[in-house]
Length: 207
Image (tube, rainbow, N blue to C red; front, side, top):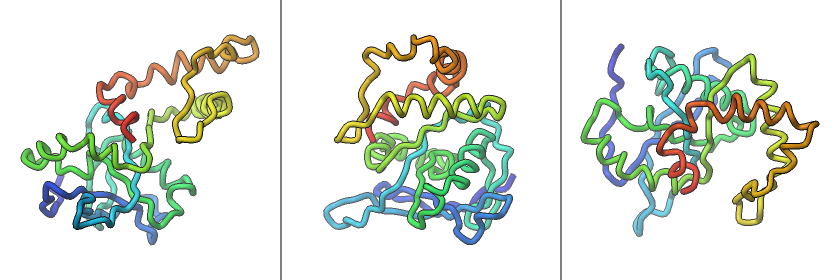
């Protein structure tokens, strides 16, 4: 596995990735890597970006994508997330859709860079316009989990500041007609590895 030729990243910059508009129909995922300066008194050009909250899974990097035209290997779980985001027109159709993904945007083989960027990860999630949570994908459970997502979005409406009401009294989950939703929520969605990570609150709450 060849080492990707990252360009040096200064302490006041981050990398972002974007889908290559010319290659969206290719079976291989094509990404472009961008260097962006963090906002400061001398730089106000800060493009909106989405930060991905996900789990590395088993950590084996055996799925190949092309990053700036060069082979780059990622985990199965991240490949699934990118595949779904590329297929979702609400994300991939926007020419300005930018993503921050730790595995790609931080040089994992550069300990000095990692030490700087990990410390600033709080800022990275806080400055994101949105955080996308990827819980993983199970093709056999895709229909059921989609139904749960739709159900919850209907019962937990957004409030004006963009936050969401906590389910203080989710009595609707106890109604007999919603038993299947409750089973899927408890037996599948809430048991996925994403919920076990210590960084979940930081990544989601700060955005």
